[in-house]
Length: 118
Image 1 (tube, rainbow, N blue to C red):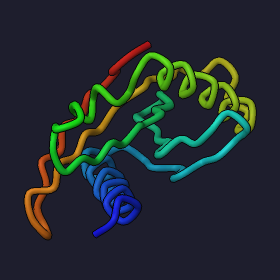
Image 2: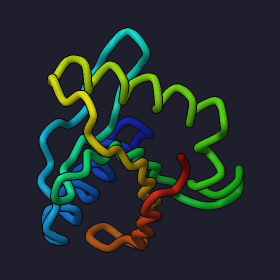
Image 3: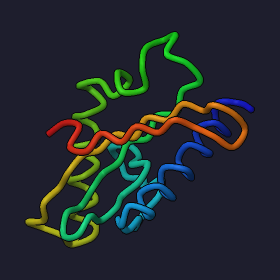
């Protein structure tokens, strides 16, 4: 499986997990001039921007480490664009990271970091 397929499968798994936990996934791969949000969800009244990182190993660093300060700033800009696009001025926003490591064809270790950064 190539990187694109690995990432796509990770995002599918992350969206399914979020819905099982009671969150509503409202967008996947939402794009704007600042970049792309992997998942946009609602957790009650809170808008959640979710970055999904899927890695086969930690050889190049953990999935969580891949969400650098530069990536965090980009996600904050994306969130501002989404809020303007959706007319959600004044809503509460949270940034989550979901890190996934496949363990087999149909198994994976998923770590959900709620409010991973501000």
